[in-house]
Length: 280
Ligand SMILES: [Zn+2]
Image (cartoon, rainbow, N blue to C red; front, side):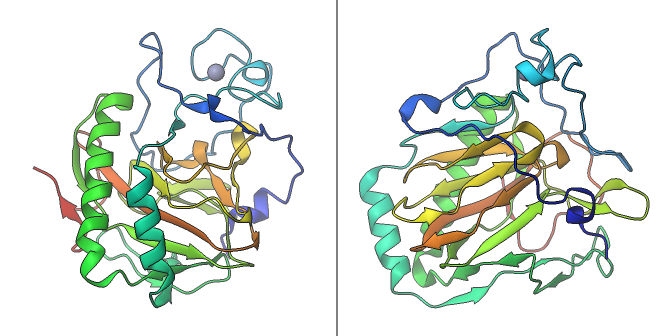
């Protein structure tokens, strides 16, 4: 089995706990462009804490984007916007979702997938479900499309080729998604990451915060977030931003998720996946 948990066993990192509204961050103009190009094979993001930080601040990684400080700004590339979606829309979508049926979400099957033919499988790595939004799926699509176009422009200065049809996810009590990168799988035999799907940016929009657990942890960056209802969170889909949705210990967590392909970034597939929403 090629599982990232084979190389990254359960650590007990010191996560930054974001407890107030101070975490909205927009990248400084002096910061470098984010590297979104996939690599065929790579050992993954494992910087020495004393090495210069990837954000080019000049500070050591361990005192910058990899800091263990309890409260700090997000590491570079993790963009968070509070109150991105208005409270009425958030409440309304959540209440609707509460009434709807759902199906189990799957993961990409690394053994059976090719770049042009993604095969998905139910797996214990991911225990969450997709809410059937019925006639309101279009509304969810539009929210995500507009958010992606806006934030990719603001944060990365890029246009997009497509986004995947968003999922409104429901994590019930006990639900989780173990550490993973959204565009890459880890090969435990060769200890390398490789791109499996053309995703450059990942986005989550949170629809509630009245649950326990369910934090989003970025293991490489010593960073954990627990966004409030209405927050939008965007980050590159590669292994630097490997993350885990922690187990919901009480209540239900709702979030909309999707992934975008950035214009100009190399693709591994010869065509967009069939189900994507193409952007002009
Ligand atoms: Zn840094």
